[in-house]
Image 1 (cartoon, rainbow, N blue to C red):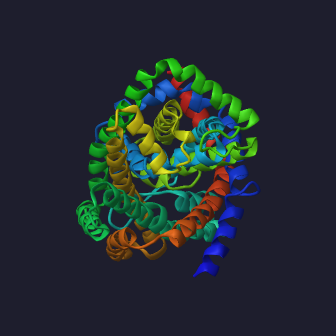
Image 2 (cartoon, rainbow, N blue to C red):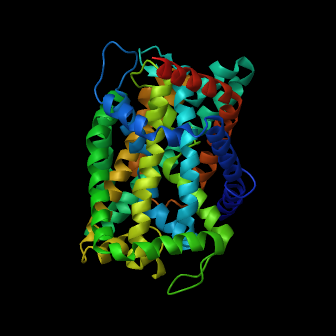
Length: 451
């Protein structure tokens, strides 16, 4: 299988390299931000207000879950290993400057996530079971017309299989490995436990997933953020130096020091962009599938709620992870991934912070499994009708256990390839349908100003 691994590595490197997906994601984000006159930045307070007012379900508005629940479902799929392992990996390969470029791609990614949700609500449908469904496959087909149905099917096909990688086996493997390392519990035990717990939630569909996500996501995010803020508070006098090294490294590279091997400016940009995108999934096309189920009477309102996902995920949670790593000096340890983050929190919280990372990794990964199960089954039902949902859920539960007990180098790489392939049709659709996004946004805010 080594030859297949090598081929996939080459393909993944091309898709996620400097010539294809990263430039395209950047171009789309910048273009949408300019076309919206930086609305996602200017209207951030209004977006927070809209989220607060959308906490409860309304039986008189079309949709299956509240706007708040839709965001929590989307966050359940994005707040995961990328916030813990992804940030430390970016620093390991790109140096502290990678954090600056992670902020840049997140700021422009807010416009991308906004546009995805606006289109998802605008072109959503009701399936044979009475559920409100939408996402890239629907806004490609319904927005671009019959000649583009092949691209809608391509997105659904790639996403249906990508879900088993990024949203399932990779996550269960991370949890099983962490629990075995920390508590010496066999991976098969963790695999069975996760499969049973996930099955109890997934069987209830999007409403059950939304309920669990609404309970778990705020709790786990606040616990993780609070722990990070305590470390920042203890070391507050070092924060100016942290910002200095982030900005200096972003534009001049980072020299080798301690266990850190050094990084060029390009490495900072590449790893900052790549890990930022992996963390918040802006442009990937996954989150709008959740937002399409929201109870809302205006696509723009849900778009503003959706863009908060990128803000919370990358600009808050990932930033705090980075601050802890840099404040404690863990970035010079020579470690990478979750072990670097664990060392940082342990150092910052007197030896106990590693448990925060372990708990965060477990909860983040579990909710990611729940969120992506919905994305995957929606794509499967688009291609094969709602009759496929039951069988897809069975395969999903089996894959959770499988991922927990086997080595996943091939799955990791295949997931990267499939994620890139599902992003391409989505990004093309965002560019072609951007006039619709701009028009609906102008109309909404013109009415707001005149009322």
